[in-house]
Image 1 (cartoon, one colour):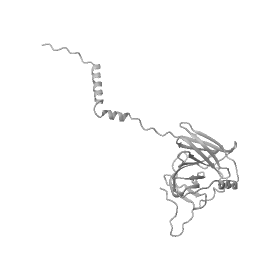
Image 2 (cartoon, helix red, strand yellow):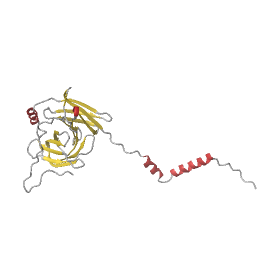
Image 3 (tube, rainbow, N blue to C red):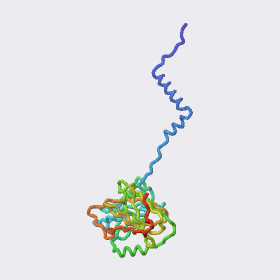
Image 4 (tube, rainbow, N blue to C red):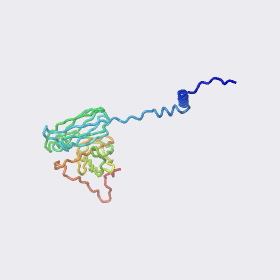
Length: 268
């Protein structure tokens, strides 16, 4: 009895059959969902920009140790603080896109305000400012001439302190003093992770002072109208830096009356 004729099974035929089996398995129930999940794109990382600039009196004189405050024009409940270092250079990294108002303050100089500085990834904003020298009396008179307002809302200020381009900094002293002089200053010290928190503040104008050993001190006027987050970037103090007389004054922490707890808030 003759057997029916059969075509020889080639290597290419076996390969095609194997591919068909793989394709059929991919259509099994539940496999489409798994394929979709594996093909889902990873969440996009936020695109952050950098703001940098210089402060000088003229082409030969840089302003070192000026406090720089950056506040977004929208969502103004976040503040970024740093200071000008050697050559009068400052920079703040990790800023979301948008428009920012800059404020530069330094004892012996007229406060400088730069409005509507735009940031757009991947570009960086470079700001060059010229600060004018003034006497301390004129500087204080200009501060007192500004419009003052206060409110009854109880606010909070919390945030972090880090070295510019480095690690979180602990044991950094922060002091908040109301500019109307009607309340005692608030003191706090950053924890090991650089975090700090203050509560019981009222809306209005405050002076914030940040001091860390070996770093340029920062002193600036800020306005608080809502619970606010503050990020402070400390800059290493140059060896030839000459502090002003006011910077040499120690932060005085008043002692509470007997039987009363200090008003300073312990950092979290």
